[in-house]
Image 1: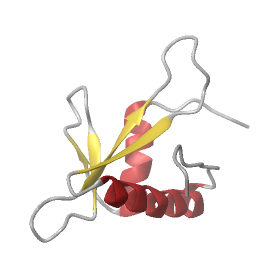
Image 2: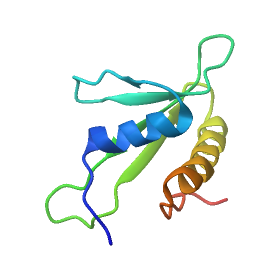
Image 3: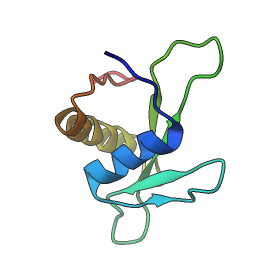
Image 4: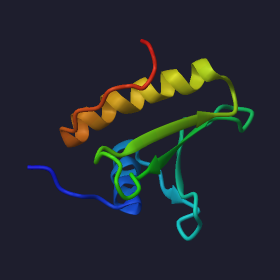
Length: 96
């Protein structure tokens, strides 16, 4: 059975899975930080919920201030963590 989830619910699930808080909860761009680097740079997750008329899967976007490769690595790590934690079926939107 599939059920709808809100952006904050999805971020809360991600936060629990990676043991990190949801940041900027009361803004238009709440996020969860992933594996910060020593120099303070790092990666974070934002959730995009489909707008009216779009297909139901939500998008889990991973960004990085280090590099695109770093973002991809963090995305794959998060994907494996979430699949184990939630049972969600997740696929990357980039070549592996």
